[in-house]
Length: 479
Image (cartoon, helix red, strand yellow):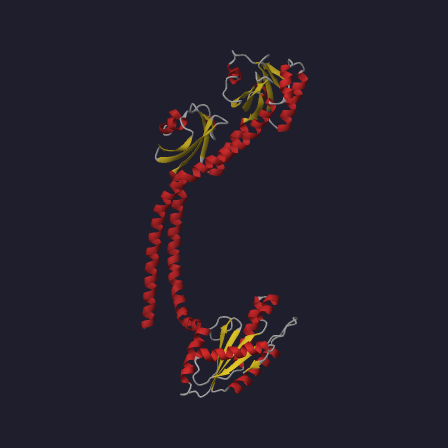
């Protein structure tokens, strides 16, 4: 009855600890995780998304910018313009080759002298300062950089919206003589942004320096919606458009929006990456509900299993404390207790006491050649044979590794040697050696208790005898 009461008390304490622990951990985890998610979004995730997109945009534009720079520094192009633009076929063939080689929508050249707009099919038109669509060309000469990225309708491609990489063209004396460059299909850029939005599960779009949305998954907003006049983001729009990169927070209806922004100099646009707190915390709330359910199930299972385990634990604890798991013999710790008790009885209940220390020969070689499982099976076989061939009141234990110890009570050294030699012979004859060349055997050292002996001194003498057996060639008993 006291044992049963003790078990119920243990289960009650365990249940209380589990319930308290799960409630405390889940509550603390929810509070900490909410702040951690918000901090991670602000400091890591949104800026990292922005950086990743910026890197991909740079990679997408770097090649066209590089190609336009090569065109602007091409000796042929410079000489053709300087020489008076005489051979139309040569320039169209050159632009066609560029367009086909680099898989772009168009390749073009606009001369500052004749104002002719050349493309792969010939002369498209003459640009004029009086035509608004041609203003881009007349502003290039005063542009502070050698190249500029513009988004405009491509007259050479049925007015499809195109991203143009325009690069200044200079003669050999450094005089401005025109503009050359490439056209990229803006649909590809829009598709790229939609892919980013889907991959990162965040709102991603671009605005120009005036605040107009230039690229957005919702195409109806492009060039129509200005963030300076959009409820919510208008509160931080001026800060955004006046900066270079950073992080802002604003309220939109009943939700808080976390906004990371970055200026893209290649496009002269701002990249905006937004995420609402509600969407960011949704996985956390779902995880909280799941954790509560899991916690309840775990608590119930632990209490049920614990009751069964405690019962088995009490029954197996004693065996675990004194038995070697591999061989089933006593372990060294329990043998020490029995050995000490036997030594105390010498002269009172026991007249003679002998100790045999033996190990398995070549166990390391067996492990190396046949594997550790084969070595374990060899140890088990030796242990079984030894246990079967000892007397009822003798004590055998695994001493450690490949060593075993046998305590013979009411036995002198000579008798102990004979008993151990019989075990040695049984090991040699009974254990299958398989196809290997090594014989399976044991070496044994025997010592008899002498007046004044301690446990340590008797073991030491037996160990010396074991060493002598090994020195003499193994597979023998020395006593």
